[in-house]
Image 1 (spheres, rainbow, N blue to C red):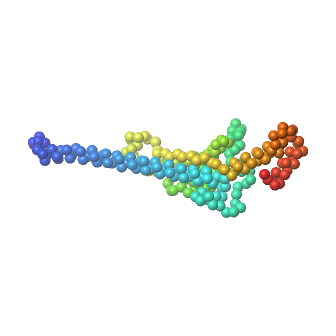
Image 2 (cartoon, helix red, strand yellow):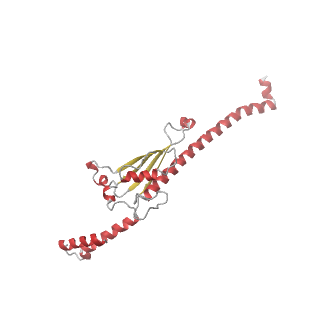
Amino acid sequence: MLRNLAHKEEGSFSLEASLVFPILLLVIFVMLFFCLYIYQKSILVQVASTASERAAYSWDNSFKEPRTGAFTQGQRDSLYWRLKDDAMLGALFGWAGANNQVSVQVPGGGGGGDLPAQKLSHAESGMPAGMQGQMTYENSLINRKVTTELNKIVKVPLLNQFLDQTDLQGTMSSGVVEPVEWIRTVELVRYYGAKFMGRGSGEKINPAVAGQVLTQYGQNGP
């Protein structure tokens, strides 16, 4: 009976439909799961990039609002926070046990800890609910950066069998730059260079004159 049905036009159409339709349905489901995988990946990368950029942008003042950069007039960090509160000791003397990296968990930064941890927590607080991972600040003197690593929100069991068994992750970094502080540092070097080196004349430095310059700079600034 099946052989006779296969020789007829109606039977041939029925057999082709019964074979092709399940294959098409399977392909459609695989494509849907793959699109879901790509969508979750893009969400993680976008959130990680936003958090890193906000933290890096507001790094010069822990009182800044991460989204807008606004802060109340007069609220600022201590004068020498870049020396004692920015993991610089770890970058200079890592052999002494100091650490040049600071990390906070996502979620649950809490806002406590040292100054870098507080800044990371401020940026972490603006993430959507359900994110998991960590934010890390690294100071290597010439390169300061904030790195955000996030794990996937929704698992896709079907694709995990074909791709990998690890969690979906998104990692993004953003460099910490301070143009105003850089200009201030250049002006300071020029100021001291002109005062102590006799403006290129090769004259020896007089300790008394150097002391007067330091005193004047401390009182009036560059």
